[in-house]
Image 1 (cartoon, rainbow, N blue to C red):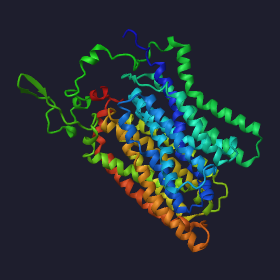
Image 2 (cartoon, rainbow, N blue to C red):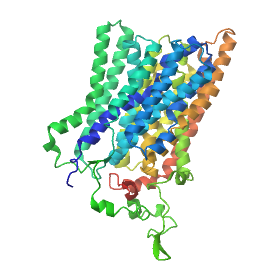
Image 3 (cartoon, rainbow, N blue to C red):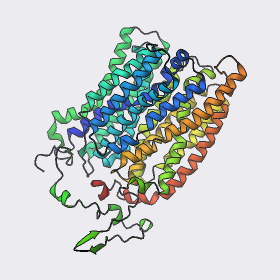
Image 4 (cartoon, one colour):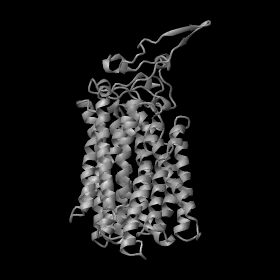
Length: 564
C-alpha cells in the first residue's frame, strides 16, 4: 500500500507509550486518601460527610458516558483536552478550599468540584483505552491489562510524590493535580491517535508487549521498595529526588520500543503487518467490502449451532419501488452492538452486576483505607495505600495476561477469573472483620490483587461480546458500577456504621477505634462478593460458545463488523 506507514509501526507504539503517562495521570481518584484527612480537619467534616465526598470521588472518576459517546465523534486529542480542563477546574477549587485561600466554600460546591476533578480520569481513560484497544484488536486482554495496570500503579506514584517530593503536604499535592496533570495531558495528546489495526498475528508484537509488561512490573517493585525505604529511613532531599528521577525513567521505558523500531527499521519489515495511521486510507478492497447492513461476522461462518438465530445467515433483499433495500440482521454476541441493542441482553446485565459487586465492594475499602488502618492500630497508613496500589497493579496486568493466555489456549471465558477472585475477596473481607493479628497487610494485598483483576477482565470481555464500534459507551457504562458501589457500600453503609460506633465510644469525637468500626461493613461486603461469584459463573457458562467461536484457532478471529 503506497504511502502507508510501515508495518507494525511506530505510531501505534508511540501512542501506547504516551498512553502510559496519560493513564498514570488518570489515577487521580486514588489520591483521595492522601488529602481526605485535610478536608476533614480543615473544614470540620465528620466521617459520613467524608465518605460522601468519597462517593463524589468515585462518581466523577467513573461517569464517562459522555466521553464514551464523544470518542466516536471527536479525535482523541480533544477528549484528552476536556480531561485537562476538568483537572484544572476541579482540583483548583479543592486547593482553594484546603489551603483556605477562599475560606467558607459550601459542602455542595466541594462535592461538585470533586466530581469534576476526578471526571478527568474518565476522559483520560476513555481517550487512550478506546484508541489503543482499536489499534491492537488482536491483543485486547494484554492491552487492557497494561493500561489499566498503570492506572493501578498511579496510586503508588502519587504516594511517592506526596511523601517524598511534596513532603506530605495536601495543599502541594492538590496544586500539582491542578497544574501538573493538565500539562502532562497537553504534552501527550498529539501522540495518542487512531491507526488502522493489523489483523494478522505478529511474533514481534508479543515481544513488545512482554517488554512493556516487564518494565511495568519493575516499576511497581521499585515504587513499593522506595516507599518502604522512605518510611523506614530518614532520607535526604537529594536521595528523594534521585529516587523520583529513577521512577521517571521507568515510566519512559515503553518509549524504547518505537525508538528501537526507528533505529533498526529493517528488522521489522518481514515480520509485521500493515498498521496505518489515521491519516492514511484503507485499501480499496476494504472500502469496497464496507457494507454495514450486510456485513457478516466471522463468527457466523463458524456455524456453531448454539449461536444460530431465527434470522437466516443469508441477508434478504426486499424489493421496494425501483430499488432494493438491504435487511439489517440482528447482531449476535461478538458482533458490533448498538447501545440499545445491548441493554436488552441478559449477558450485559450479568456482567454489569458481577463487576458492580466486585469493584463496588473493593472501592469501599479503598476509600476508607486510612480510617481502617487507624481503627486497627496503624499510625502510618501510606504503606497500606502503597501495598494496595502495587497489588492492584499486579491484579490488573496479571489478570489481563492470564485471561489472554487461557482464552487462547483453552477458550476459557474471561469472567471465570472474576468468579475466582471474588471468592478470594470474600476471604479477605472475613479476615478484615476478624481483625486477627498480622492479617491486615495480607488482607489488603489479597484485596488489591482481586480488585485489579475485575478491571482487566471486564474491559476485553465487553469488547468481545459487544464489539469495538461502540466500545467507549459500553466500557463507561460498566464503570458506573464503581460510584454505585461507593454510594451504597461506602457512603450509606460504611460511613453510617463508623459514625455510629464512634458516637458509642466517644460522644464528642468523630474518630472510631477498634475492629467494630467496620466489622458489619466487611460482613456485608463478603455477602455481596458471594453473590458476585455466582453471577460470574452463570455468565461464564452462558458465553462459553462465544469464546469457542472467537478463539477456535488459538487466536482471535476479528468479526467483519468490527473492521468498519
